[in-house]
Image 1: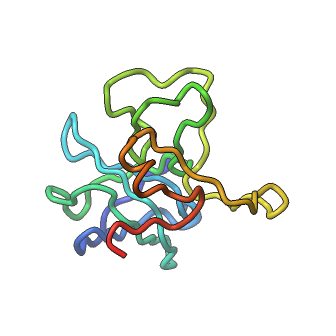
Image 2 (image 1 turned 45 degrees about the horizontal axis):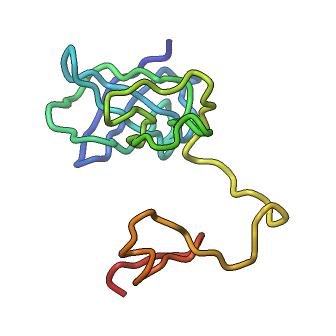
Length: 151
């Protein structure tokens, strides 16, 4: 288990020092325990050199302080994908928001990954059905398009 210590906190940006040679990879998830039941997940954004990394907090940094222990999970943040997750609501960490269990057969994909090759992408225009009749009828969304509510 790779651990480090917080050296500086500025808003949601947190600098962490690890032993040199044990620096976590970019996009790895790091965890800091505020107390017994509350943790803050950080994501490595940059290597600063000399065993230091800069991470972005994905929750409030209130309560974090210098010299708190940070644990490298060794993997990037990932979410479950597949037919078993249809109809479920997830947060960015892949945890269900309604308290239900994530299906065991669901694969997990990292949130940072390469786009599919152009040969696997469709060029035809399709309507994205939201299931909300008013939106589908009056303001349909184009599948894969950029949707702006105010312009």
